[in-house]
Amino acid sequence: MTVCVKIDGRLLDAVRGDLERPHAFAYERVGFFTAGAADLEGRLHLMIQTYTPVADEDYEVDRKVGAKIGSAAMRKAVQSAYRPAASLLHVHSHGGRGKPRFSGVDLHSANYFVPGFFETTPRMPHGLLVLSDNAATGLLWLASDRPPVTIDQFQRIDAPTQNEWGCR
Image (cartoon, rainbow, N blue to C red; front, side, top):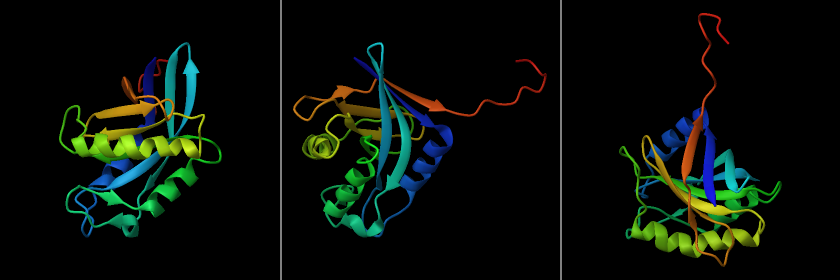
């Protein structure tokens, strides 16, 4: 199965800006996307609907990781995906340009917390995204007891520009 994530360009720009904000002690910011999911001819499409940043007070001090979030942040995230049922995607940025890579900490922690998202919305896929300034990488779990699949494509959706010559 191939997986494509689509996101409104204005939302993506706002998310990148939010994730760049400094925090009092965390080295990086974290947020969550909700997305609708549709299987079209064996290709899974996720359309990002909302973004929820983790609140400042929901970060925990841990100098071994870039950002550690507590149970309150996770609870808020899964509640955002409960009704209507939506996919939940943990998102953060590594900055820079080009296709980013997950760190070992990213992969280790995601294997622990992403399967927990299925307790709230068991019929939706859930995952992990890392952004750079111009690209993204992602993993998607289709079930809590299965290994993740790679997100194959990211598509930025922008409003069409007006055609100055009147062509349609």
